Image (cartoon, rainbow, N blue to C red; front, side, top):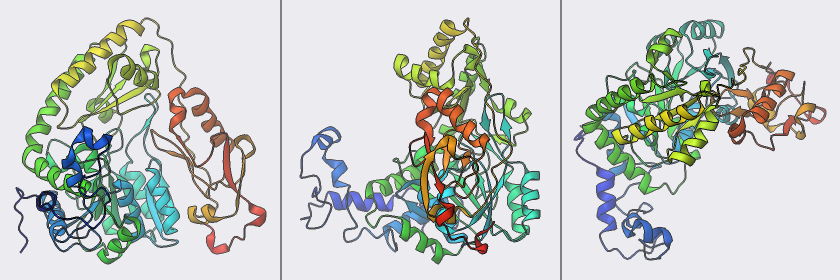
Length: 499
């Protein structure tokens, strides 16, 4: 029987014990427990290096854990209501890739919203799976993609009875969640595996005042960024599973193919201690930050030119639910774009926001957010409004495409096809060999295997020319003035490759 004493931090405790043991290190890493002085060591101290070990005797192996890593993973699973958990040291990106690879084989259909993270598209390329896209609900007023409706999900499942899995975001980057329980139940009725991207939802597991987590509603597998909202170090994430629909041997094989054979002990230790903190303090501290967020929203609602995008607004827009640890503010009525405000807030007020869109800014609140932080934010936005509100230059309306580009081949086939580089304006009617996405909101404009249309070219040019600071957030493999297309003359395309 497993020992679920949540006070324990088995991996961190053993790692600390080794670091302080005065061992003679003839293994890697080469800094030999911090014996090589450098600027980083002088700043952070030697103890960080004492904890940077590479699986010495007694510290277990992430690739096949049987000791303290296994114990720490069991504690994580129990704390978050899952059957099993897997530690990740290369972020939720690795978790998403492993989920797709372990569930979907070549030509398997997977149903997913269009506003997925680029790692999902990469998972399609690696696995050879075929995407069935669902259009997310679009809020044209503030220019973001929200949840997917149950009706759209049901339609996709009913029209694709041979689909293998469905992939849902819980929540979106902006905090909006779909009706995950209803979606999961319907998907299971049709024998689909339910996979969930919870990169921004780790906090859901520790408070009943937040939306439901994937494990609470019965989803089969989720990838969760503990580092984003639960206090572990950047790149430390987890996979959670439950039920009997997941092949754990295949999942482990996929993870071992993707993860480093030298995983960071610091990142794993941070997962171990973050779990303990959230388990015992999360509920109270999340309640506190929700109260602080409510006060901040009420103050901002009285600022001319500032609009708070709160839960009531989103529910009125038809969204299912909202994570109120996200603070979204519409600033475009000041005559500034969100990107302008993003830069001004850092330059003039030393306030670092999470992200910006054309009309909004987004702040991510966690149990590490303080009352003083929010007071500084409110004051800065008030000063900004006093300066810019009277200008009231209207920004151009952001257009969203409601028709997706036609698919011509699986993403994997187009990615591996012969290709060449052409200027963007010369790519109309060609087959894309790469992904081009805008972050945020993260909706792929084009992915490998889709036909580039004039609308695709127009959208890319709009973001390049009008986006200002957004230009750095155009995500593609080449210079944004060019695009990789399939070299059709030299491409042997088999009939079986057709979608």
